[in-house]
Image (cartoon, rainbow, N blue to C red; front, side):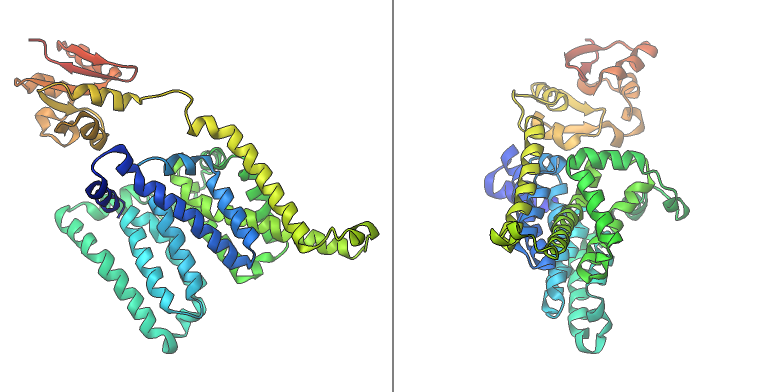
Length: 417
């Protein structure tokens, strides 16, 4: 789904960095709006929704990825919409159709990862799903729309690529883990990455989550849904050491909602406690009025937002122009007329920035699958993009090479004439 949206952007605006990043940026902004709506829906307070939107919008890795041309922002958008429309479907099952369409789009964005939304949707709509006699037409309609959207693409991939299910569902989706290994927690690195991704919101998330549990706020259906959402999307990442910082971006959404609701609900609890003492000064100046409490609540959130943005601003908005090494070497490769081979995995980037046909060596026949094999077997003119350390392999095999271009990470090499 993400690539379809990017392709549509290319058709409308032409192929450029702007059109590549446009879907991520637009849907990233829409996610901010929808998390506001979820916060408002579960708490019946605009302030909670507004706070959740500010929290998500100031998670540093969310901001970084939204500004890039990748699938994370698109994935988060469809995840949020799936949950929000499920909340709307309670009592108005027509929204279940929209929820299933959004869930289908989620499954078309990052395959198995999106499946974690399904138990949350089912939990939110459990009374409606149990009442089959009343809602069976809506349920069947939603499932039919989901199948019509998802199954054709999955079937084509399965027929075209025999290892599609194994690769995407098990090798990538579950990292090749067995059922027993999901009970083996390896949480240190994932939680460190989560802390680095949300920065100052991390400990507020821990405190808010603990409050909602210890004070039995999870007895409310909306709050138990939030906590379940947090668990099902975070837990798999806590059982593997292959988690990367950007994998955790979808976790930021329930985190933002838990913080915003936890602080609000905890603040109300404190205010109600203070009211019992009937302090004259507070009564005289009406300091416990709702608008005063909301003002203090929003003031605290805005202050933390300010500190957060002040710290990460230079990370997101560079103070000087910087070209990544893979982009730089790909741009340089574009001036050569010979066949270009890539000894790495950033093929789309290399094709885009070189504006040339590029052959990824990993998918070439055996005689060209490695840099050493390429230099041994290829007699036609060629250039190869490789990492600097890989040149040692050529030297160890007594193969002569000529460096045409080089930066801190990559080299463009060829056979000497």
